[in-house]
Image (cartoon, rainbow, N blue to C red; front, side, top):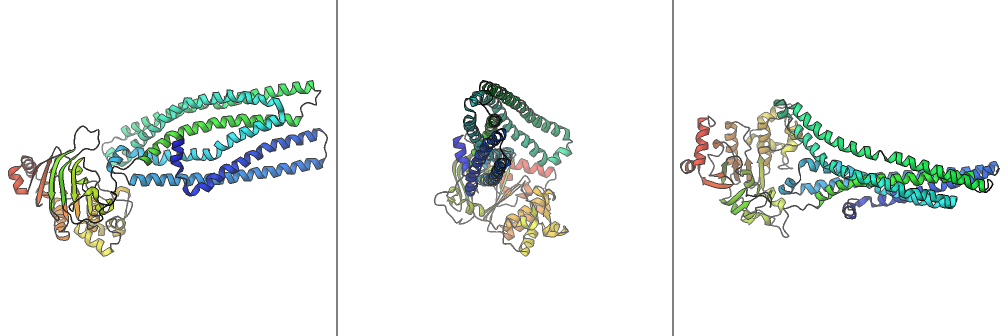
Length: 582
């Protein structure tokens, strides 16, 4: 727990002052609150002795001043606590988000998307609440407990032993309850991931859900995950509900014992042994003592809940990216040549088999390469090693004659543009999305590039043209339109290497041919790698690579592969007979 606190304390940063001031004002508030019953007791005793209005007025003014001072300390403590906790949560979310941005694909594969979302939202909120408790309630409760006990002994003498005797009983009971609910809360947080995963899958695939009329199935799946989580929290709350009756038993028992013993003292001393003020004050201190015992138990429970969240957050913060910049990185990419020297790759150290095996491939700068292969042949894995989204398990990948692991990551990735089949458009206008490729591109340049990508025609047809707003994920444009915008975005980057990962699958063959023609004319010096399912998309490439089972089965031109490669010939004949090339 101490290690987790130290690790997360680094997120306090500019809010250290507020974090320190909050417990200071809490301590002052507690001291004043403990003085007020003592002054009240003195006032009651004075009234019992027959004092005049001048005495009552004096004590009254003192009590008002103490109350105002206590209120001021409480307000200031709350303000500092709110500022510090919200700032802490802001910094924590920022650190988590920036950490995830630096992750490699391998790191992201380790944490599911739903789990990362839960850690950035629910877990951060839990830790924020724990932080508020640590600098406010966790200070107030023990301070109040100690000061109230001291004042009770000062005022009531040995009668305060009643409270001291009840504290262990109450502490044991509440600790037992807290310890019982700890495992329940720990398990519940893992179920948050499952619940978020259900929501995420449903929303992302809502079109598929509706087209297959699976709303009822998805509703039941969500209901199951939500119900399972609700059952855990209900069970925990039922156990925690025993806190209140145990607390009431302790308070009532203490009142009975204090009344009994104080009555015995008064009788034995002829009514002079214990004043009414002292008696009422002692009861007040007793309630404060026992109430803060209960508060400490709730602090314990809340911190227990947040501990699991803290562990999950620290796991993300401490995760080291598998891909890092070298100590003295190369800052310039000479050209778009690519070399795979005996490269093998698997997604994790525990994987039983390689996704790619013994890849030996050499691509000249400016060459156009087509890649054909069946599902699971690791076509995408091959090209993802070029910009170091993954690192080779064995062998060396070179770009511009230099091992990619020697480049500055930003430098390398700035020279490699990737257009995926399921590429993403972000919330914003079409112009804003296109300028991801070149932030300084002029409007005229955007139009020219969109014409090359066959996107200008449909963009110009929109009422707002290039200022048309794209919804999250590009849900308000078709698949083919989205792919053409992503191609235009990649062209604006003017990269040395352009990778198209089945990124024209949603456009017709005529548009596909026009886009490839634009590539030849616009970026002749750029190395172009085209992954495709259609032979027509790669048949005019300088060379075509046939992948099968993570290995290169053949390399050659369209004509050469028709003569020498059975897999390529089979794919070609099936598509020609099916009319795919017509």
